[in-house]
Image 1 (cartoon, helix red, strand yellow):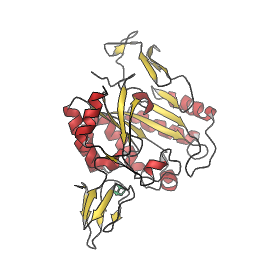
Image 2 (cartoon, rainbow, N blue to C red):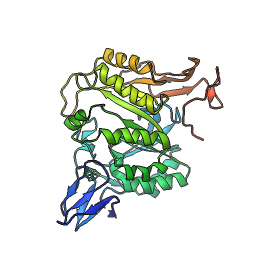
Image 3 (cartoon, rainbow, N blue to C red):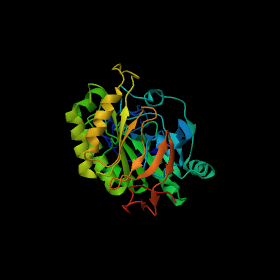
Image 4 (cartoon, rainbow, N blue to C red):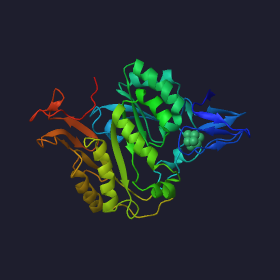
Length: 329
Ligand code: SF4
């Protein structure tokens, strides 16, 4: 097994994991909340290194990332486990329970991506932060081979490991579940809002980011909270794409599905300050990207299919405004 990074020993034989704000104190032979890190004889090991629970080739739009290499497919992989225990987890069978994994060492992963003509590797479906040591190894090898690394993450990570990881990360979709710290404590079982906000700020400085907010009726859909969320993103960068995603009852959450009208109201608020706002999980909603200056359609979308129609040399073909995209070679 690979020794974990970011931990320290405690006097009583337990170890303290310093990777994320859950701050697990782990007894000998036990694992942390995320299922990925285990104390063996007073040393913390990343037992999930190179162990994979899911492999698929997906459109990048499915992550969702609408402004990264539009129209391309990306090799998408997941580890088993998560550092959160969200009551509304959509992938609970692989994130909340120990399940069977297969070996996928970094060399094999990169070979798969190259053979599949993928532009990169997306670490997704569950929480990639808990795959930290694998991300560093696979991410470095991917870069050496001209591939991009994409994280779809909850953003719940401590600052030192985040800074160590960011040079290997080309783009992220970061989940901002709520602007209310109590929401994170009650429904995700973590004291983590500040960490997510920090990940968004640092991520925007050193990587390309998009943000997703899953809108749940009565829990995080008030106008006040939507405005707070939009103000925060706009303060970081109004060009960060925001995906407002429709919630459906799942796992332990029995609240009814989000009315589409609620999402449209939130989108109207968001468009007052943000350049790119999209609705998710609502069927064939309008999801084209328009130039914020000229209104020209830059990228036309139908479902997960994208076609670049209004960009020339990285700029709007009508007004010349630089397009806010991360392009593939
Ligand atoms: S990464 Fe896992 S073991 Fe470490 S603190 Fe977070 S949940 Fe606990």
